[in-house]
Length: 582
View 1 (cartoon, helix red, strand yellow):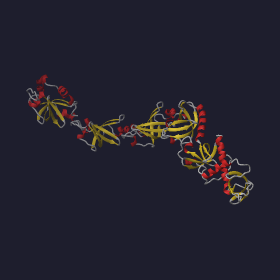
View 2 (tube, helix red, strand yellow; view 1 turned 180 degrees about the vertical axis):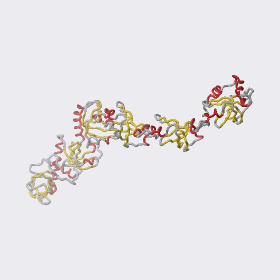
View 3 (spheres, helix red, strand yellow; view 1 turned 90 degrees about the horizontal axis):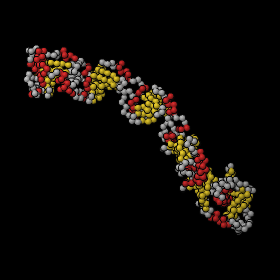
């Protein structure tokens, strides 16, 4: 055990702490009482000077000028290079524990004498407000045991400025301490290291405050890490380095960049003298990587990077620390409908992309991943020229048409108006379901808007183009009434093709209500009296059929201007039915 005042070493291993040894405390108290005896008088429990006259294997014989010498156990002298630290002729201080006047035998202790002397020296140091030096030797209840020549107690609250979770890591460390409690009678000493650190911190703080100003670059030590940043000891005062000011790039947790105890240079971003709050920056010491991003990543550049974030609308790719670009969900695939970026990639993935646009001032870069591959839509015109016939499965049915798979990720739309030349279709689902195999004709390819138009009715000629030849004006035809309206009756002359018998053409006499003359399902003999294939309209007449022997042209002249024209009938009466037969 090191004496903090003399520098000598004594082995006190396995000895009880002084504040726990009541026998020694009692002797110590007696020694204080015994001091001041007459000159040359030897008293028990008093330190006396002696001379080593003999050294044996187990004892050193010491002459204290009494009737007989005393023996001191050899281990009380300690060891130097494995040998007892004592020789004949050495002058030593020993404690006279007891003596027998009759026999003259004395019991001596060097170890207890050393302890008493150390207590005296510690007492004197306390009176002079001096520091003591010692080594932390063990963990005890509530704190640590410190060897300062004798055992002393260091409470956990006095170890450091902040509580230390693992006190065991301090065992074996040597420090200076201030004695904050000293009791000779009970053999009790309490130490503090914290008061010294507080004093040192105040001195450092005065010096640091003189340097603190916005823009100043200082050196500090990482003192503590939190989820939101790191506290940096600048010398007597702490500053907060927020996680967003650690790097131009993304930092998930401060521990990714820093460790407690790291030394680093930081710049002062903000300082409030009133509250002594300091905001620090680490990334601000380095150049902002966005300063040259526009030059380094011009539009069209192919780049590689790491996926650092996923959102509902896209993925952020880090191309270099601090520079990220956004791949919008619409720029991930030419053909796949990506519902969420996580279906295509994961955080940490290395991906390639093409720079689409750069805004250096706003710090935004737009990226595209699909641009790495050729746009399949640009090849469609060569693969599927207008008018060619394709075959594919129905992938979706809507109220406005059906989508037919052309190739992986590309569907063509057959609009409801392009399903049949003549059939009235209320809903495409009445004719088709998912998975059906269909044939269709390529009508149009819009590469820019990625639209592929198909037609099923175009597989066959338009019957209306042949209708004037098949049913010339004046020809007689038999048909079935499909619908009766206030203005006349619709008659189907062949599947899907209807003509209108206006109310004025139902009878020679005036007809007030067509329903009084015909009903749905009736078969009528009619004549074609007018036709417009482009507008898909046919005018029929029952009256003309009744005058079979008359010349048609003469009949029409006899009708005069009272007969409704085709345009009037279909334009005014049908209104919303225009084009319903398409």
